[in-house]
Image 1 (cartoon, one colour):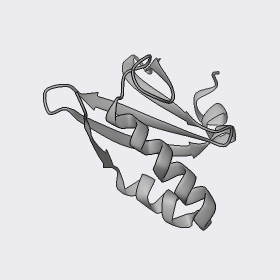
Image 2 (cartoon, one colour):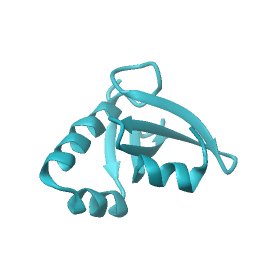
Image 3 (cartoon, helix red, strand yellow):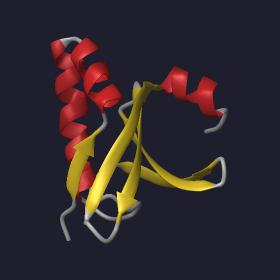
Length: 95
């Protein structure tokens, strides 16, 4: 089943701030979330528990990490954060 992908405003702002090459790489990798569950489809995806809630992450190269939620009923992926790997480590303190 292919899922729709919805980007939060902050993710869109982050993408706009990137240079053209980085933006293209991120956008192409975010398309992998049409198959959002780890082990299904392409991409380095993992299920995490952050502050007691399920959240998923997608590594984009060795540079960025996208955090997302899955709405199974609507077959929708909500990308809620896109951070540099360094910022993700600092904010969440893992991996």
